[in-house]
Length: 211
Length: 233
Image (tube, rainbow over all chains, first blue to last red; front, side):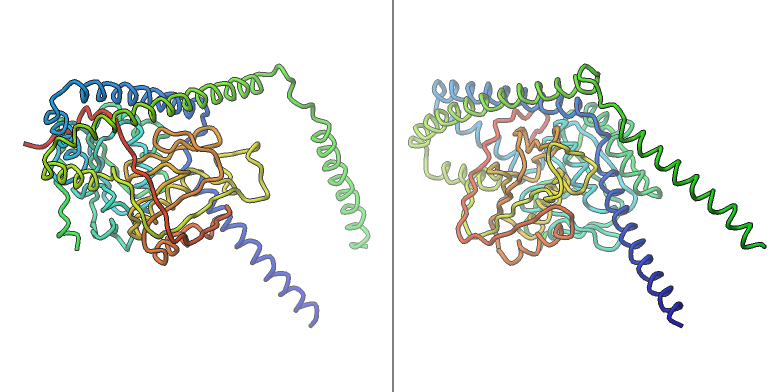
């Protein structure tokens, strides 16, 4: 009788250990799926490009300073207003870019990983199902077969549109082992279509429709 | 008889396996360390050198950008003094909408650090005990979802289009190189923001969150050239 009890106890302990081990494997598996194939030189290249962009930022700032000092005040202000209109989300914007379509919902961290990759490659504006990504709309959560984007409930298919250098963005995300490959590996039944577009239109953000 | 035979087979078998395991352990223990001139170590040195070089370059660039920005703000302030109040209001409104204004208020400060059982010198991007770019990205997403009015990482304001990427064993937040630990600040309803932190609490990294009564997150002044974005006609 005691022998049986001991066997049951040992079986329970082994069961718990196996469950813990499985959970740990799932966590590491997810991390492996989300992590790009480790290539330190690719990462250093990203750092190099970041510095290049900072140098470009410095040039732009210096040029803006020269122009501000030499231009008529109204002209400088108008240019700034135009630039802010493009970034604020208050007006419909367009430009070349790419369209990434998911035929079903995914865990929303994949959307953040994908968007991060698009931004690194030069995306200047991004929208999901025509809702522009701004500080008033950011934040994703998966709910059933849909996605909550702050206050917008989005249903499949999910269309991510990005305005920016279409060829570079397309090659960055659709390369072998890239983010699209990794999302498909983790979601074998999911279909993802990546398409370059000469013109992407992202509508203005409408505060009322999010209520 | 059968028991005796079993003993005769099983005992030598166990002794054999024991010896084999012992030999494997000894071989492993006596394995020669990688020579100092070997390719992986040279590569590691090159990586370190490049990382240092880029970090130093970035520090210089950051300083020069800050100085140029300061002069630009002064020049603009001069111009704005001659501008009509309506135009200035429009400018301020658009700046706020684009996230180019400072945001103040109560909020939360979260510190993400590695599990004490690991050391950054042995960083691996597939080890969940280290703070990874994906941990920071997920937390920022959750904070925005809980209506954070502004978020920063190690003092750099992050917008929804700020990329958070791994570089070597640290992060590139937008274009800025940031090293661990990562301090994330967010302005908004502290209770809601605390709920956002719960989404990453079950991970193996260390997460400390404090409610802060008064936070001021400076604006990001993006001078990035917009090459593709146009107003739609």
